[in-house]
Image (tube, rainbow over all chains, first blue to last red; front, side, top):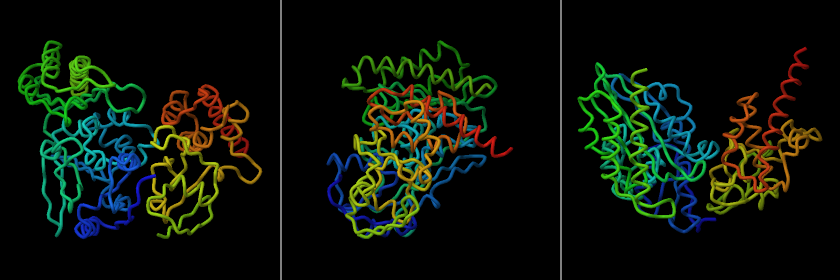
Length: 289
Length: 161
């Protein structure tokens, strides 16, 4: 059981922000709780107040599609992301990732916003959002909103750009007027475990050529990493095995893995290479179909 | 703090600490010890109960979060003396050995059958991938779920006729 704290329940986004303003850094928002509560039980995190935002699911649980972007509310649960036909139609990378996040029962509770705010370096949805060049909408006191990139959002491991009196409310994924394909792959020790290494890829094609491509890696650095050099190397070319090989090699030398119980740094570089090739291959197949 | 929730159709109001987990509320406060407490880290799945009809791991949900909501535990599965078909399936096909994982398995598998009345072996394995059976009785658990699926289907057919 966690150390003692006071429980508060928020009924709207602005009321939650009001509570955060009043309670300051002694308070923390809890959504699904499947990252935060275990950390509190292990005494890795400790707060005087927990503000339960599960009642905000009505306000922040949505997937909205327009011509130029997809907007996903921060309280959208893993199961909803997995089961969304709208999302699978545009960005199948979400379903790929959700299938390997924890297990079905945990996915009933965990949320997109909670996953991103946990900012674990091996977190799958952060890698997905990095791959898709997502923007994060953060709301503060007085309804003030600011929009930051994924790179700006993740300040460091378990650290985000969200201030003590702010809340992440939405993720925006840009859509481009080209054929798009995306995919996610993860190597894990057992079903539902954290990644040894995982990779996401998104490819945009026009007349058979790559207009843009992005690769996002997890568990090989202090945060999930997008690799601009891969995008630069792929743009303007026709997809080919040689190109995937080149991208894999860039991924392997650009990442920063550490040797730990999940594997050696060399093994993880090998995985970054292989998973980058595989996800690019699948993403291109999906863009063409 | 005071929390009020409905468990297996009965409303309970109790004074609790904010940090109390739902699994402890059910077991220690209400005395409903059918729900087991295992790994305490959301891995093993023995503590699965339903929150508003969805299976959740009750060692990672605060009791306070369930305030105003509906909880269903393994004690709420049977209809009086009549076992739920999923319970009967576990009985017929030896779905339990030591029985420790059984309450969580039953709740997860009942929820699976409600959504998907005719699951394949693969779908059953996927559904229980967050549940650990330490006796490694997975094969008989899968047979038990299939038994329940088949018997529910034939029962429904009989009722329809």
